[in-house]
Amino acid sequence: MSQENPIRVFVTHNWQDSDDYQRVFEYLESSRNFFYRNTSTPEHPPSRVDTESIREDLRRQINQAEVVVALPSLYDEAPDLTIFQMNYAQSQNKPVLLMQHFGTSRELEKVLLDRCSEAVGWEERGMVDAIRRLARGENTARYETIEFNPDEFKDFKLD
View 1 (cartoon, rainbow, N blue to C red):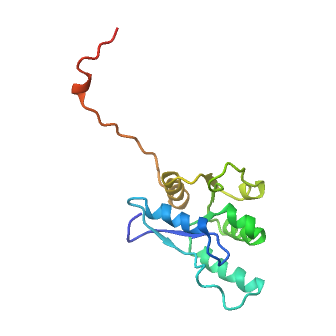
View 2 (cartoon, one colour; view 1 turned 180 degrees about the vertical axis):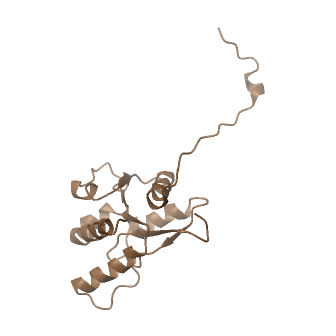
View 3 (cartoon, rainbow, N blue to C red; view 1 turned 120 degrees about the horizontal axis):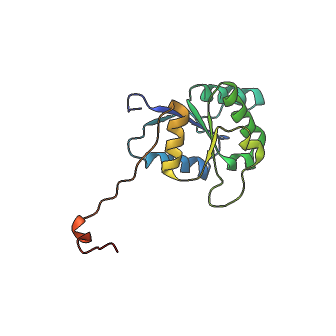
C-alpha cells in the first residue's frame, strides 16, 4: 500500500451526516503511513429516492471498495439499509469490518456479527491493521520497541 495504490474503503451510510462516519476518517487520517481512498459518497445522494435507485447507488460505491466498514449506529437508524450494504458486500466477496458501538460497552447485534469478517473497537491502530489485513491480506504484526538507558540499571543486583 502506498500513496499511488491506496486501499479503497467504503463506510456504510444513509446520506446523512453521522458522528461515527466522520470519526472513522478521523481515525484513518491520524494513522501514519496509511493511505486510503474513500469510495462512499454520502454527500451525493441519488437523484431519485426510490428504493432501487438508492440500492443501485450503494452497489456502485461498494463495487469500488476493497473493504467495507460497517457502523452499528447506522443499524440503529436504518436497519434495512445497513443489512443491504453488508449483504451486498458479502455477495461481492468484499470483507466487512464491523466497528463496536462507540463510547459504550453495548453488545453488537447478532445480525451484524453474522455478516462481518471481523469486529474491532474504536482504536486507530486496531482499525487500520484490520483494514490492511482484510483488504490486502497484509501481515500487520507489530513489535513494540522499548528504549532504555543501560546506565540506569548499573546498580541493579539479582539475588
